[in-house]
Length: 82
Image 1 (cartoon, rainbow, N blue to C red):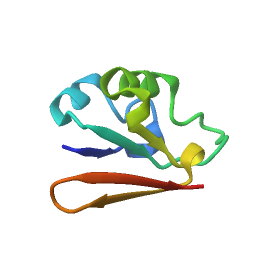
Image 2: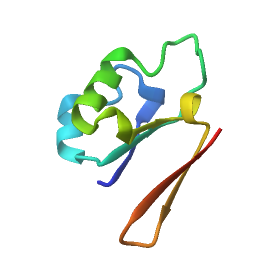
Image 3: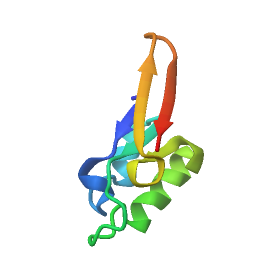
Image 4: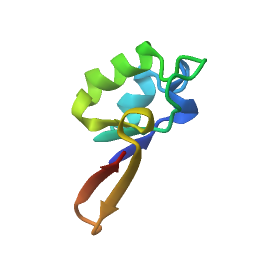
């Protein structure tokens, strides 16, 4: 998969190492509210994603605002708007 939309706002059980190994995404998008009371995304999920993708390939709505993915069918661009 090219893009992973991280499930359940990045809760601890949403994105296991095994799942990431099978899906093998190039980038991840996490839809999450700022300073949410649940602590999502969890530090464990962020660590897994950063290990697999590098922090530059993880986009979070609480940090980046609106995240747009644009493709021509061959290439992918990410545009963020705070």
